[in-house]
Every structure is written in C-alpha cells, then in structure tokens.
Image 1: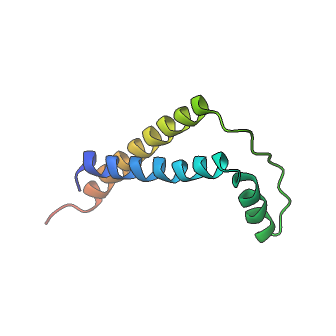
Image 2 (image 1 turned 180 degrees about the horizontal axis):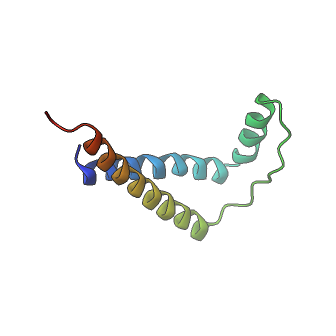
Length: 86
C-alpha cells in the first residue's frame, strides 16, 4: 500500500463526508437530520446546529482533510508493516 495514495484517498473521503454535512447545513437540513438520528437511537438531541459560516466551513474541511490524511498515512504504514512480503 502506498502511504501517500492511501493518505490522499482517506483525506478526500473524510473531507467529502464533511462537505455533505456542510451542504445539509447550508440548505437547512442539518438540524432535522441530527434530530432524526438522535430520535432513531432513542436519545434526545442536546445539540443545536448553528447558521452556516463559510470561514468555519473551510476550516472544517481543511482540518478533516488533514486528520484523514494523517490517519490514512498511519494506516498504510501499519498495514505494510503487518503484511510483510514473504
């Protein structure tokens, strides 16, 4: 497994999931979705979705990409170490 490729794939995936979340917030469906997920799990929702803010949205995407990238890189290195060619 190539660490850079795996890191990039995981980083883009994690940021992509958060992009979907941001779109849901932007179109006003973030709070209803969150309420529904909590209801589905027999829980009360203690969280309130705040209004969309582009600066915070970009920061979220950058941070989630970097966390996903680092996680993908570590996963790839661990995978390669545990699956040595014989």
